[in-house]
Amino acid sequence: MLITELETEGAEKRHRQLVESSGKNPIPKTHARLGFVTESLENTLELLGQAISTLESKADQAEWNVKSIAYREKSMNTKGKVVALFSGQGSQYMNMGKKLLFNYPVMTESFSALDELFTKSNNKTKASLETLSELVFPIAVFDDKKREEQEARLQLTENAIDYYKLAYARGQAMAAPDDPNFDAGSMLAVMGKVEKLEADITDFPEVVMANLNSKKQVVLAGPNEAILKAHDALKEKKYTVVKLPVSAAFHTPLVGHAQKPFSKSIREVKFNKAKIPVYSNATAKAYPSSAKAIQKQLETHILNSVRFREEVENIHRDGGRIFIEFGPKNVLTKLVENILSGKDFSAIALNENPKKDSDSLFREAMVKLCVLGLPLEVLDPYSLPAKELPEKKSALSVRLNGTNYVSDATRNDFEIALNDGFKVNNAVTSGSNSESNSNNGNSHDSLREGAEKMHSVEINEVNSLSAQEKKPVTDQTSSIKYKLKLPPLVPKFADKT
Image 1: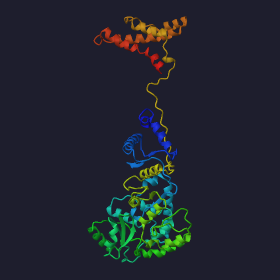
Image 2: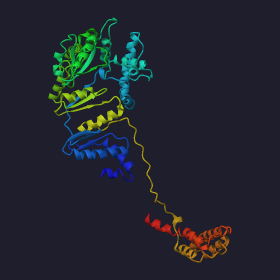
Image 3: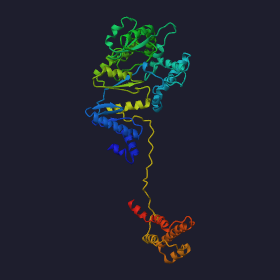
C-alpha cells in the first residue's frame, strides 16, 4: 500500500519518485485519478488520509473536489470543450500574480513587451515614463494615502494578455477628457432577484443595465450621482449592491468619447480569421468568420451591454464544458456556476483568491484540470531537479576485515584468562614474545601476545588504586570479566551481517 511505503524506511526517496513520476506519466483515460499539491512527505500523508476518508464517504460519486483534493472516476472527453474566460478591470488588485511571475519566466515576456509599449507611448506624449509592471507591482508604501493613490492608478490601466497594442489603445481612449466637469460615470453590481430589476430602476432613466451577468447578478452603469441614488434605492428594496472600483461607466454612452479613437486603432491592426470560435459579449454569439466583419463589430463593442449570461448558455449549448478563468480572482467562475447550475460542466479559476499565494493557486488549478483529463502533467518546466538524497547506512552495518577475526586458539586463551582466578603475574615482555614468535612461527601466538598485554594492563590498572579506593577483588573481577568478554561477540555479529 502506498501509505505504508511512505511511512517506512526509504520513504523520502519513494516520495520523490512518486512526485517525479506524476509529472511524467500520462494517466490512461479510463483510469480513476486523484490529484493534489503537496509541500512535503508529511503533507502528502495527511492529504492521502483525507482522500481515503472522502473516497469512503463519497463512494457513490464519480467526481468530487474537497479541500484542494480532486478526484474523478475517469477522464472527460476534453476535445473542443475547453472555454477560456478573461476577467475584467474590476477584478484587478495590486501585486496580482506576483509569486507566479517569479516562478514562471514566460510571464516576464508579456510584462517586458507591455513595459516597452508603455514607455514608448508615454514618451511620445511627454508623460512620465511609467511601466505597467510598476503599476501592478508597486514599491511597498506604509502611508494610507499613498497606497490609495497606487490602487487608483492601477484601476486606470487596462491589463492585456495578448493584444497589447489594442489593449493599450483602449485604455488611452477611455481616459476622461480634459474637461474638469466631465463625468465618466461609475458602475454598480446588483445581486438578488434581478428578474425584477429593470422595473425597479425605471425612476433612474440615466442608469442602464450594462452587464447581464447571471441569474442573480446584473451590473448597472451611469452618471455618478444617478448611481449613488440607485444604490440607496435598491438597498431599501433588499438587493445586495456593491459599487465597483472601475474608472468609468463602461458599455454606456458615457464612454462614447472613446469609441472614435478606439475604432481608429482597430482599423490600424490586421485581423485574421479566427482559428477557434470566439464569442462576443455584445451579441452573445460567436464572431463571424470574416476578418473584416470581426473588425467592424469590435468598433462599436465598447458602447454595447455585456450579455454574459446568454453568452455562457450559448457556449454550453455549443459543447463548452470546461470553463477556465484567466486573470485575477474568480468572479467569472462564480457567475458560470450560477448560470449553468444543474448542468454538466466544470469551472476553474487560475487565481481565485487574492489573499493566497498565486503560484500555489495556479498549481492547484492545473492539478484539477489534469484530473479532468487535460494533458497538463508537466506543471512547471522551470523547476530545479530534486537533489539526490544520500543513502542512509544502517547503524548495524559493519565492514568486515582481518581485524574482526579471532582464532579459536586466541578465543581459548581469552577463556582461560577469565577463569584462572585472576592471579596477578608479571606481564610478559614484548621482547620475549617476539622471540618466541620468531622461534615457533605460530600465527595465533601474535594474537595471544596482544591478549596477554591487554590482560596485564587491565590487572595493573586495577592494582594501581590506592588502598582507600580498592574494592573487593570479586567486584573488580566482575568488571574485568565484562570487558574481556567483548571480543568473542564479534564473530557472532559478523555472522548476522
